Picture: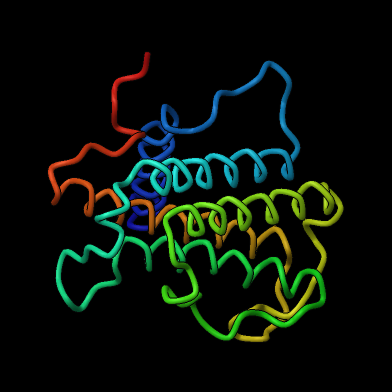
Amino acid sequence: MNALRSASSFAFAVILCTAAARPQMPAQSAQPHTHSEALLGVWNYEGNKLIAMAEDFPEDKYDYKPNPAQRSFAEQLLHAAGGNYFLINPAKGKRPPTGDPKRSDFKSKAEIVAYVRKSFADGAALIQAKGEKGLNDVFPDGESGSPVHFGDNAWGWVVHSGEHYGQLVVYYRVLGLVPPESRPKK
């Protein structure tokens, strides 16, 4: 009985989460998506939200931190975009990054915007190139070195981007600003 109750509770939670997330996801087409098309859609969706923030946030506030122990707005963007290369590089047979991109290497907002845009474009191109069959390709994880499937790893980096999007929303709100995604649509 407890197993049935646990299973029912889990199923209900999944349904609630799915229903809550649905309005925030990219529009669904009449044709069913392949798994790689769905991955690409969500990759681009999360990337576009971060790109919009990078373009929108005032440049004079790029080094703002809600408290001294946190990354600045610019460092959050660089961290999220740089994380994409922990997927991209190993999947292409290259070495993963050795850490976050350094803020000192990006002198302006325009340079950071370009880097964020490029990291998501590079990831999107890789997902497209891999296609449906490539989702099962195995390569060493960019962090642990353990074998990982491309599709599983890519979904993990989508989640990573979403987590940093959520953190950056706080930076907006603390400064009395409204993030682009939260503004009324025209």
